[in-house]
Length: 270
Image (cartoon, rainbow, N blue to C red; front, side, top):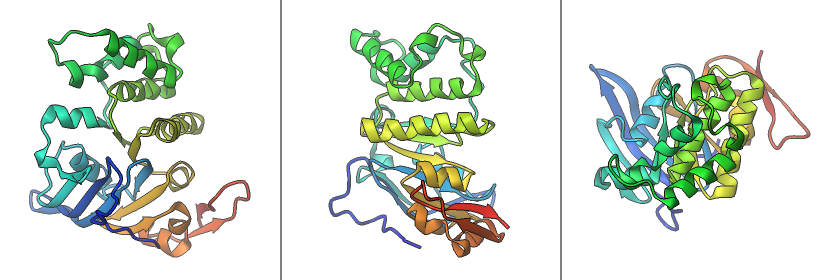
């Protein structure tokens, strides 16, 4: 297992998240305990673990949706509490699990919502804003659907529309909470391929909560695993996909097999 120091500030890449000794307690119950991790800029970093392991809670702390009860979180070398709301919204975009809103909007209208941090509710929508929306539609291959209602889209198309909104936000870092939940394998591949392309071609960073360890290994540069609110593994996909490490994460016996066409093995339950 490879571990990473969240406080290795020397030559820290721009836009990197880091958490140091983070804790989160709700109603006397520890959700996260002594979590220290780094999320380097320019990478797709997965948060994995069983249900209730603290993945979504940690993502919400990064997104400033929840305040940690212990420790410190920083972005681009600066504590989160020092960011003004609009400045942070321009740098970091968050996609939660619950996407029940927006069904009655067209895709273009939804994507345009990503420009809100740049002009505000009463601000004028400029030619520059329109250009960002058009670029986001192009990057996510949604131009032909731009005037369709979000509620008429398939699951994969709908997720692409929400990702397009984040792209239009022009943020350095995207925080995605299980964007492939309830999608079939084909649509999971479609969405995760898009996420990886947005990072590696657009100079962005992504922190993504995933359940499927094989999807995490295939599409992510780095994997952090939580169990019962604590870090139990952290490293490159090939380091994490080892039987002993997988048992520590999921509490069941798992094997791995080589996949010659891939850079890492494939894991399966015994």
